[in-house]
Image (cartoon, rainbow, N blue to C red; front, side, top):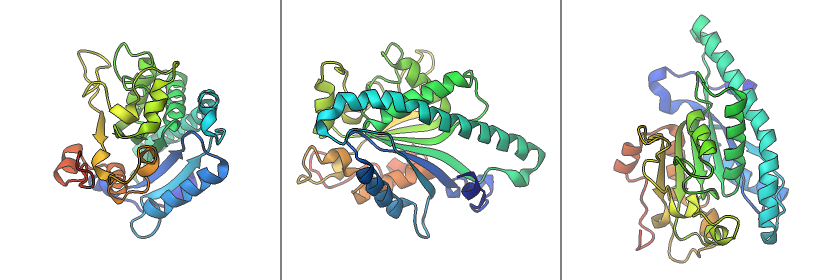
Length: 286
């Protein structure tokens, strides 16, 4: 991965949006290895291939049961598998710090890639737990952002993750501090996450179904967490896309894929709104 990143084209700091990405993709619940591999290949073909490639995409595969009946065991697996992702993120952080020191001595050695992350569904829970552990492991105060862009797609985590007083706020605070910008893509039409919220152990509304519980989140009343925002993607999906299919439709729809591309590029959220990238026209309720 490091070798591939060193081969990316070098850009002036003023051309930040042109810089290539090393993007980690974390799949969600109910995925066999074969399904996860197809998901990865499809996304690579759409965003990480050809002349408009965003850079390099790497699949982080965690062992879900591949069964709709395995939701709670999958959540347990997600928590356990977070330890392995913590090791990956910690090694990446060490590399970024080393590159920063090398750049001070020799600007020609500047890092040529941003590190970003796309997580889908319960994969966001893996990321939440992994980043919280990495934050603790690195003794919290950090000199660089570990993740440039974190895309939380149909996230099966609590909607108040980033709010002070939320059950998982310590995790949310860690994720926000390790990341330059967090974008949550959600839809109230997602029935899969509606079922998730209804399970007796997970009664809190899901981020991927309702969006943030506060905008911006309030990790500290005196300091809103303004590097976290959300986009309601309901308007991108036509009426005929049923409520269960919407859970994975973000990776099939041209409008949401275009949004993902430009979020990763680092376009300002106001620019994304002005260009019309945050709204679709496929659903009358959007």
